[in-house]
Image 1 (cartoon, one colour):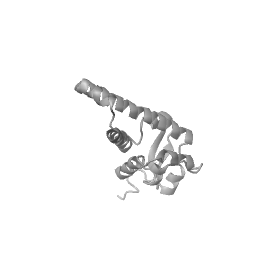
Image 2: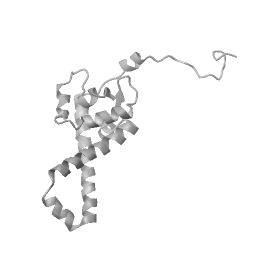
Image 3: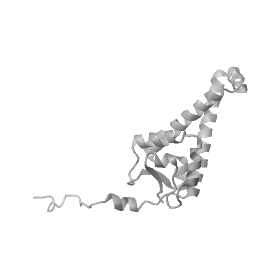
Image 4: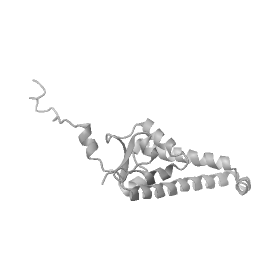
Length: 159
């Protein structure tokens, strides 16, 4: 019996990439800005929690170290938190806390979940100085920053 006549065979439908990509609605500037605010607060909360643990372990030495901050160390901690926040969240789930709140998610240009390489590209592109301002100068019909354009990803509405 051939597959077309088999009653237990799953129905087949042809899904075209162009059709799937045409159905994608990119997130608005407002949604992207809210994503940025919420994700920034989440990253600051992570840094605060790390400081509390450090103070609990090191005690007075931690307080003394914080009185004279090391700018390079602070920058490296900030970069590490960006990587530790975005890579697992976007890589495994396609969302961050901000995207969950606004009903958006990261996809590749065909509407599929992004690859790990694309997620790493997005994350490291965020470390480019003044990258956050790149969203302000994007086209109105496709709001995207360098962290979207370089790895060829989109942030789309899911609701």
